[in-house]
Image (cartoon, rainbow, N blue to C red):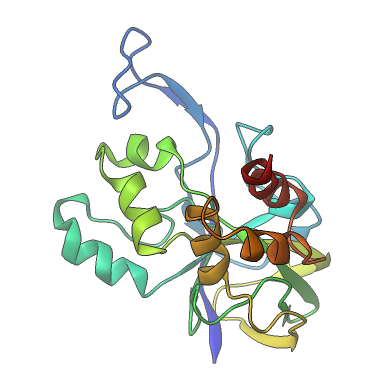
Length: 218
């Protein structure tokens, strides 16, 4: 059973030292600090009403409307980085989910949540902002290495969702293309052109991810 354990939204904040290039303390404007909210919340084509995105060039939009993350990963982060105290929302996800992770959901999967429906569009590609949020330079690389990245979904049918809502799989067009596999291909895209070509052919994979993969073929 897949369950929404918590829902997170954020306001935009600006902080940091404008005179440093240190990734852990540099100046930034961000919506990374997601905090749990009580439901119901409104899910639209562009995400959850009340959630703010600072960098609209690289985040948000229909293909990255909502970021999902497996709740079980926080046990691993607690073991590896106990001083950080990471918990739900710590990786800037909107939906923290139990009963699912990158190895068990696939690109193009559709899930119903009450009156809503979402579709898996791409893995989350870790960036420097993870290290910045937690003040730990190794964290972004560790997220990529472990595959504990999370994944984005587009909203196919809008409506209201709440914590504790169950998610039901309604379609799986690409059963061999888990989020974990898509992550692995991106990490090793120079050495496996056949896998790159196959993943680019996936109708449901976001165009942004396809573009990044295609750059390896140029």
